[in-house]
Length: 254
Image 1 (cartoon, rainbow, N blue to C red):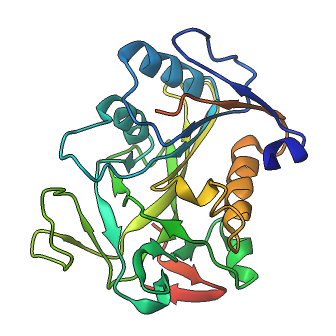
Image 2: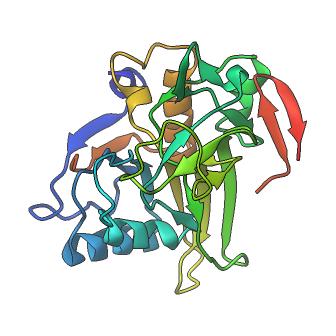
């Protein structure tokens, strides 16, 4: 509804049945529950190489240690982002909601998507989120920036068979990145650039959470950055390191 109110044309897309239009402003994938296949992967990569844009909202799989999204992860890897499975727990009470240590209130990166929210001293809430990792990328062609990050008292767990509610020695210490924005020049050096935004949570855009604080603003700021506010066609795909961080308007230096 927010996209339509902002004059975006939203269309559903099943990549196996429809080609991604070359003039699509952005492809949106919300909480994929199964991996894309090789054909879908090629379609997405080709679209991005032509200057397309992708918004990917991915959630943790809490009941399996299986590698659930290897093909989709390989697309994210091209932009220096890894979406391997895990979930995040915050131990700093300033950065989680009430008593829910998995309802995260992250710090903001210095980026046009998140900085306005921090400047307004507002916050976003991500319920049950996945931490995003890093993959190698060509820094001459790709600029990657942190959007959201937990505190240094947080931790992430990638072993879903571990039922402990407390941090163990195998868990990964924070800060944990929850959102990235990445811009990449095409491999053929034609001058075209694609943009990708990835968040380790999709619940923040659901009806129960979309109206919380600046959640809706985070989503719309991401769409506007991806599209450059120039084009108004939006496709919904199948549902299947700066050293300064803004914290609700303040600046953190690490």
